[in-house]
Length: 342
Image 1 (cartoon, rainbow, N blue to C red):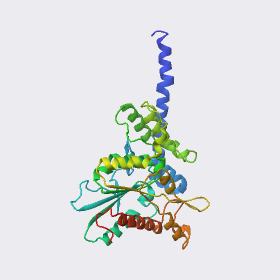
Image 2: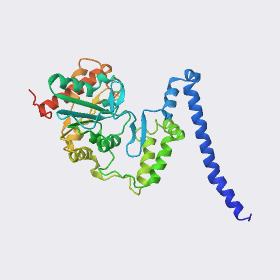
Image 3: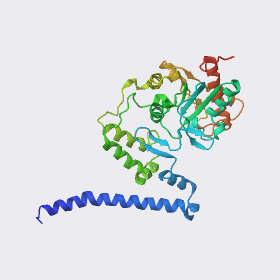
Image 4: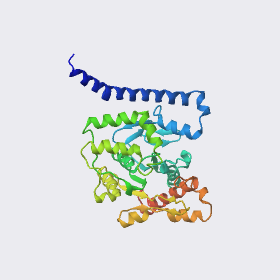
């Protein structure tokens, strides 16, 4: 063996093989630690806060599956049902009116049962009003979903269910995504993202830094870096990206979806004041938007905020009922159902 080749091999071992081996070892030890902690008697001795964070690090078994375009998707179906996530036939009955309510955990109804979520309550109101009609309201709310993720799930999955009406409830003005989405252009990017997605080390780092990166989580930062920077695209977005609702309406139009409406995102401030985003929509002349703030203000004159809000944005049954009633009245007034409002 030559003197020249030996340093090269030492260099490869020291700076390539050894670091990779250490990372793999840490990954395996972390997986073993999490399994023993959460699946044995040790689980009973872990404080709730730590147990919750440790559970977030563990990926399997999980109700979600990896998706390179939409971040993740529910394994058991795109819609909330009485017993968890479920699927529905993509093809409708001939006379069926299908409404999809898309959003995050506030649409899902994270703080209430399935039959108290606003999509279910909306369906109940419509079926009571029109008992002879075949009306189905599907709950496409995804806890923890970003605006970009909801847009992409709608663009690549929900449109296949042929809804007549789409109701969005999310702060769409923060949707940092374009109409065109790069797909399958670089297999290396998807491999890198899959490795990170499956890594317990990366998940642990994300959980530990969640307080520091609340506005832009490390999980999304890594995804954006891999999917955009590595593909040669500039992450900085053009100024007209504040017209996000127009993108949603364009996608709907191209798939034959007749009606699209947004519901304002009402929340409480630290001072217990009510705010929403209706003004942002109107300033950009984006419509239609169903504004629920006045109804919330009226209700808060009767009861305490704790009876309407579980936290700053998640709602009790009283809150979800307000949204359902407002959307219901809007659909009747606009005659989007095709039945009239009589």
